[in-house]
Amino acid sequence: VDAFSVTAAARVHAAAPGVLPLVLADRARLAQILTSFGSNAVKYGKPGGHVRFELEPGAAHVRITVIDDGLGIPEDAGIGLAISKRLAELMKATVGLASEPGRGSACWIEVPVHPIAELRAARPPTNSGG
Image 1 (cartoon, rainbow, N blue to C red):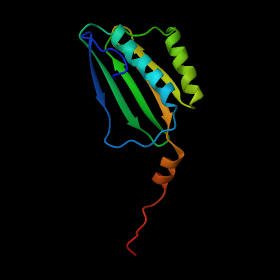
Image 2: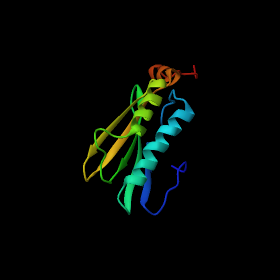
Image 3: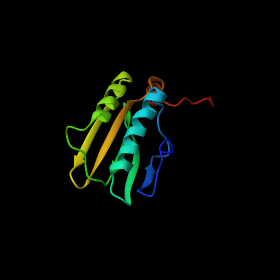
């Protein structure tokens, strides 16, 4: 969230569960995508509106969603979403958009869970006591 300038134009919130699995992602590409989603949510949101970052773990991926209560994004959204989609594909991740005119938008990226995290989740706990 602190990667871009947050002004009085919007309040930024974050929500995440206590524990998240390791993910397989390029840090710079993921940061570029989230910065794009977040800065657009602030820039095009309504004055005094809200922007929320949510993290949701899944069995095969972690979804990071940026939600705003702004004007919404037309289906033929600009180049920023196309660039984010390409960056996500390079990481074997996916991006998506849900938008309702006049009510806001939700942009998300689903980043694959790291194979080590999948192995740890599948392996039963060991009893070292004996």
